[in-house]
Image (cartoon, rainbow, N blue to C red; front, top):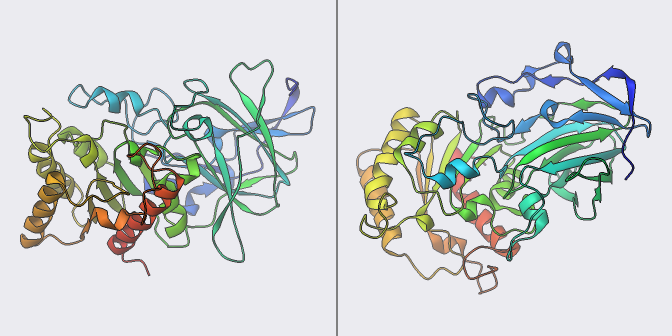
Length: 391
């Protein structure tokens, strides 16, 4: 694609721009969209495309409660060495992060440059790790339908590392653009027709405004779905019609006490805890990463900071389901202890509900493939539905 020559004249984005506030829930309230806030400028190039920086698109799943090194971050810069290096390093990954909006443009042009360059893994595609995919809301069924991914995108000449792709669009449709699972975003721009506008999305059909926060492992992170929209966290969001906040950290979700303080700052509708794969049962097995030392302190602090917010306690993600292991049994006993103490809004998710029914659910014997992710989404979706008391 030829390098775009920018016109000197700049036009005001004919859209309501999200007023970024310190509260995640406020990010998603339509009342926060105000035409008077449309002061950011877009540029129309000589090909008749109006470009809008992703920083001025409505976004979900991004940390907004303090300064961050980059715009597209899941957790703040203030994490200390009490939190493992994996979490500190991967908080720039945009797993679970998405743009959601309406547009009357008849096309979308997506220009994207990953934070850490384009890369794949032996068991996970480049589209899943570093790319994006697009969904539209089907008006007849009320369901989200896949439209396109970055597969086949062209290099943006003159902008090393960036790729561009044009996607046909039905004017007026609502759009989701899911961002990379195992990478961050360095640059993102959306191109629309010069006379088109971006508008606030309609509220999620469930009526839930606050995000469901998923905290967990590489599987929660999205490994190893073929594209971002097929990570089970994103599937749950679309199918239940709820906002989600993905805090999966590959090999690094181990329930450090400090993270219970940090996660509690997110004004959530529900918290989902899915860390057992990354933890040992005892300190002797995995010092600083044991369920015996970390789990109860973590969940008690989370509940103390966010009383009344439902919590889902999941057994170790397993689409093979070899039966509960020692960590699962510990978690079950803790759940029963808390219920006996009078805890309400506590949901337990056993691993047998994640079973695919055969041995085809993983790419490597552990991480779900797309079939496994659908199975995970069914199980976690059921638990979240129960926690939120959705019809």
